[in-house]
Length: 93
Image (cartoon, rainbow, N blue to C red; front, top):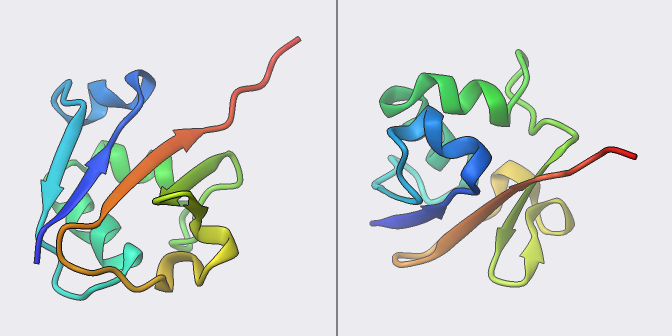
């Protein structure tokens, strides 16, 4: 199973300056995709999840039009060819 992961500009330096990654997770969940990313791009994973493995508050991950927080979080089930979009929140003033 292959899953696409689209990255914003701010996260690309932690993934070899790539805009899009394609991963083959061991399981069909968002958490398994992140675990696969950790093996290939450990610096990227640290920006997505905290020390306990939970999604960081300022990171939003979309599967289609749905934020995974509104689905099953990191346990959200994926199917072959799905694409995740990672968007960190922007703050400032």
